Picture (cartoon, rainbow, N blue to C red):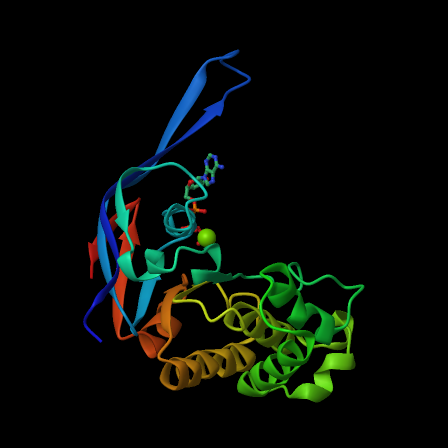
Amino acid sequence: MNEPLLSIRDVSNVYISRSIALFGKKERKPVLHHINLEMRRGEILGLTGKSGCGKTTLARCILGLIDYEGEILSPRILQRSSPRNIQMVFQEPGESLNPAKKIGWLMEEPLVIHRIGKPEERRSKVDEMLRKVGLGPSFKTRRVNELSGGQKQRVCIARALILEPKLLIADEAISSLDVSTGAQILNLFRELHKELSLSVFFISHNTDAVEYLCGRVAVMKDGRIEES
Ligand SMILES: Nc1ncnc2c1ncn2[C@@H]1O[C@H](COP(=O)(O)OP(=O)(O)OP(=O)(O)O)[C@@H](O)[C@H]1O
Ligand SMILES: [Mg+2]
């Protein structure tokens, strides 16, 4: 339980953008300043802070999507080096789901992409995962536009977890949902954390949600961690 899953050491990040006004001159925008944060295996770590403080930027550094200075060590995740070891859940659940496909197809897609299991095994994994997120196999024949926001988010969570990631990063995963639906999703994270010993990095500007769900909370302000 206490093994480090992720060590973020002295991580800083600068966005370099070409400014039109300065004609070809590159503008440097420092966002993260010497972030230190450790996440243990099996914990739900919260990250909160005002809009624009750098939360998503830190998530993108962890995913290796953008450059940074410093180190992000993830021995447990890199053990079986595979991109599927870290999965993400985003704010707008509808946006990452192809509306033309049925839920059964969408659930199977990550397994097909990563060439996991035979068709029959894949289908039983899909059924099991849909049950775990509180939807059930009957949802396989539905399309995205036949689901509520909360149900769409459950599908996104199921699609992320079907790959059995070592770490789930949820970035504003309840921000587009109404209060009671958001609370249900928080409880789902809790159940899944318990059942699957899932490690979750839960990012939200909603401090109440973060405090309710997370064992430990880091607060970010202007690209710095204030407390953790
Ligand atoms: N691609 C980019 N190029 C330049 N600046 C960027 C880029 N992406 C983000 N930023 C800036 O970096 C800062 C941090 O953005 P980030 O998205 O990490 O904030 P956040 O804490 O996730 O905010 P929110 O709570 O609104 O999601 C902001 O000032 C933003 O304008
Ligand atoms: Mg963000």
